[in-house]
Image 1 (tube, rainbow, N blue to C red):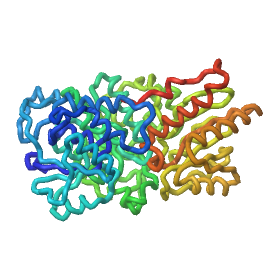
Image 2 (cartoon, rainbow, N blue to C red):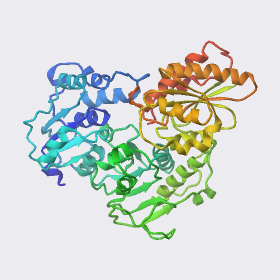
Image 3 (cartoon, rainbow, N blue to C red):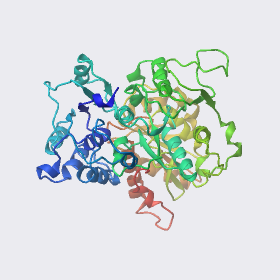
Length: 515
């Protein structure tokens, strides 16, 4: 699509990405024009029935970008090279015809209070683009766009259209995306490269324009199947697929469809990577890659853990799953001629991904809220040292196969189930001869798990209270980060009355997302 042909936008879904995009489009009369306070921007974020504990700098960055940072120009207005390098407009500020929509009445009200126009059925779709939040798979407004033969995409695709020359690395897979992106980011920084993390890991790509970007910066994009489904061709400089497990089939339908969406990340990329054991259309292992749908413009290589024998790795990267994450990161780094072998030694891991929260009275507490499918839970249990596991799981009911957990069931001492999927997980655990308790809330689950783990520790074991839900969080929480923060606050609350002389990592209970 020619960027000069875009005259109108319809943004569907006022989540993080939708708000960030709207704030940078100069398409509305913002609060500074209407005389209202900048609080209207934050209100949009806080209209969820579950406000996040310890709001991170995220809200502050949204507020400042809304009230202070000028939005980028319409692409038809030329931007000088030095201004493009800094991500700054050239002084002209044309107005787009743009509307927004969210099914939440509270968010619509907040949007109108901020001066944004809401979509109506008489919206002129001429030269318009429909930008959809990745969490939305179907919507009446999308049907209107299709009826007018207008493109539907997510913010990642729009960013590529507007800024096609920005270098981009794309990472997708069923599991390990966030960690691998963080490892690539860490490795590039240790090679002295300017780089920016964005995408599915919680950083909307347009929010990165707030302070401009270095001219030679590399964007590292975590891309979910939901996002890729809303992208046509990203022409990533390097694209890599990590793995493929049954997931999101309630949306994608079949594994073949899910696989083809994942492989679409390779479209137009001059260099692609797939796992050594990636499914192919040929029977011969190691045969040339034959993608189901991707139209690659360059070679596609196979990555494996064989490359790690020369690398020095910290304890934070123990476990087979982390070996795979590092191997994928190494493949990308080598593609960019970054070959130092000690770049990961000071990597400390990610919040909400097998995060060690506290240890007191002989009990360990681990926050793995990022585990949103059973395969991720299996990795977490596998990584636990010997000792009984008091497992907290559940969330949004989905149809992922639980059989992958069968071999790990005996490692679990008790289960504490929450959310829509609580009953399903309880029945699975009980079928393996283990007790499971349905809990009304995460707070209740942590309290009960803590009590039983203390009793277990008194008997000489070294138990762990593990939050590894295996499900999405949206039935009870804003997102997995919100769920993880609630867990850590609950742990801290359980530990404060007891044995204050024992070590408790209180700082981890309040830190925000990785930057």
